[in-house]
Length: 84
Image 1 (cartoon, rainbow, N blue to C red):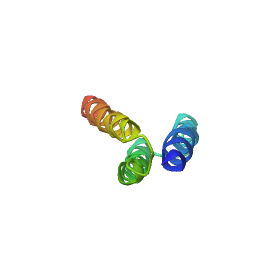
Image 2 (image 1 turned 60 degrees about the vertical axis):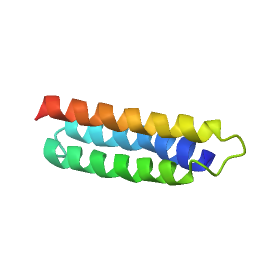
Image 3 (image 1 turned 180 degrees about the horizontal axis):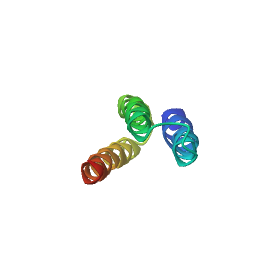
């Protein structure tokens, strides 16, 4: 589970978001396409962490990781509604 959470969701998400937002900042990528790409990657990472969450020895980590995914998704949707 640590690979899905730390490598895909946290480190990969940070790198992907940084690249996409810089491409938008320098007008190399339209904002709508950027939002779509960010949403797809966020869903990919969230589903990966959600499905791997119970592959741990201490089950509390599973519930913590699922809570983080839930609140991250809720925040993403909330922020998306402010943009649209």
